[in-house]
Length: 263
Image (cartoon, rainbow, N blue to C red; front, top):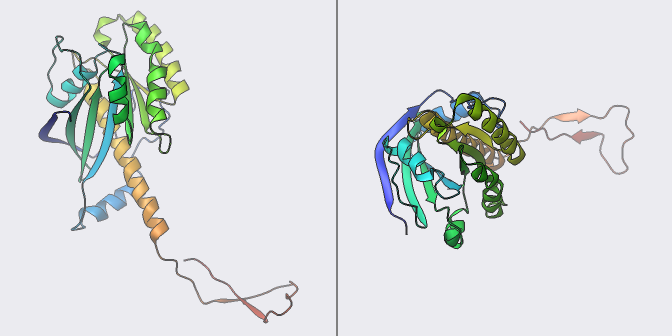
């Protein structure tokens, strides 16, 4: 079992984080829905309110910066001498979204092929998948499709939210970055993923990215709860009688029909 590292600090979010590029995301929400805010307001007042927990898997080639990305966000540290992840590492990050406690379980998986039989078992049940590639390494961008297929193969029943993240942004000049990003965004669109570029070294874009991941995952989880509550709600019928007009009365029927109107 991977070692569990838990940060006691939690991040409070009341404003909806925006996408890195509004043209490079399939997730078109830009604010919390009124129904979700109302549901959360009621849940805060509920004595039996429970902790929501979402599973986030981070995948990508070896040395693209998966562990560095997580550590920059979780502990605000950067080191370029990390050893390759062996198997899977596990981290918990706490949020307070719309006054609701929310935990994001981040599963940091090894990028080496020899660990694939181990890591792929941890893809199951993921609420969100983060596919990481190195902006300075074109081959890692090409590999994103393979990682996408691997994650989806383990989550065919309920596909996760998907993000594609380019790391080591500080290593590229503006003109080169623009060219690489254009290609990466096209790949992200093919995969139905939201695209981000970040720098774990400087911290640029890291916190906004994970805040966005947390909020979109949280909102989807709450929306499922709302939908489930609607399905489970008892159906109430009225006792109104509606008279048929200009319709031939079916044989054996009374003069009036009973109409059951759902309230």
